[in-house]
Image 1: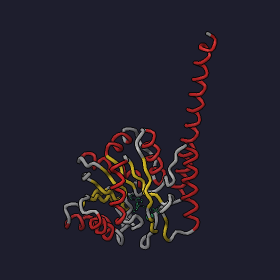
Image 2: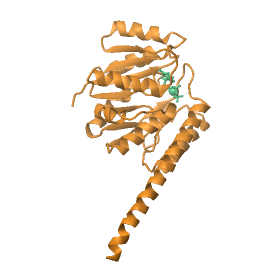
Image 3: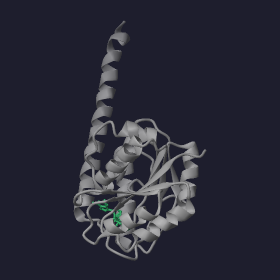
Image 4: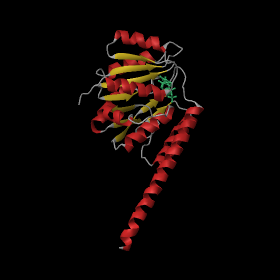
Length: 255
Ligand SMILES: Nc1nc2c(ncn2[C@@H]2O[C@H](COP(=O)(O)OP(=O)(O)O)[C@@H](O)[C@H]2O)c(=O)[nH]1
Ligand SMILES: [Mg+2]
């Protein structure tokens, strides 16, 4: 089905990368619109985005004051898309790690699902140019989240995704505080909790060749701490419901 799709691209100091990612996206999926969400990048990425938007009606820019984190940028982009009636929103990094050439495959998968997660850690998925420690961190983080949260997603921190707008409306009805990787985990977890159909499709993730990663120790620590909390909350709920059930069974057993 043809739907109105917005590709949201958050940027912080991506001056050398943005134009190429935008033009490759427009080529590989000519129908989509693009929203660049720039947090006042000191390197002038916002100006690059404005110049791209001036040349192309399907490219839009949102300027935000100062670096507020990936989660906040995406929440703003989702709100922008919902206000304008887009049917689906795609998350894509600006650094070339998420191949625009794979976008049609993600969108095709959205025909039979509510959320499509581009996945490095399913058969057919891969990562190019990552040092061992990043691979271990990503795989280990996904494994930990899978076990703690009781979900079957293999790549829970990935950031190349497509959501039907209905999912965003429902999931955003509750506040989301998580940032960084944790934002992605939180979105996957909430989509599943709300009963949406979440599928993973294999992607090739190519580590950036220009600019720097904004990944930090703080982002990893936040994700670990929140996932642990959610995992404990989940166990507590399970135990409570088991206790509740056994108590309510007592009178029946006696009668
Ligand atoms: N608007 C905005 N974009 C951000 C922020 N932090 C990271 N990004 C963008 O999010 C994407 C992924 O970030 P990156 O540093 O490549 O993370 P990595 O791929 O995990 O190393 C890139 O397009 C970044 O420019 C932020 O605070 N605000
Ligand atoms: Mg990156």
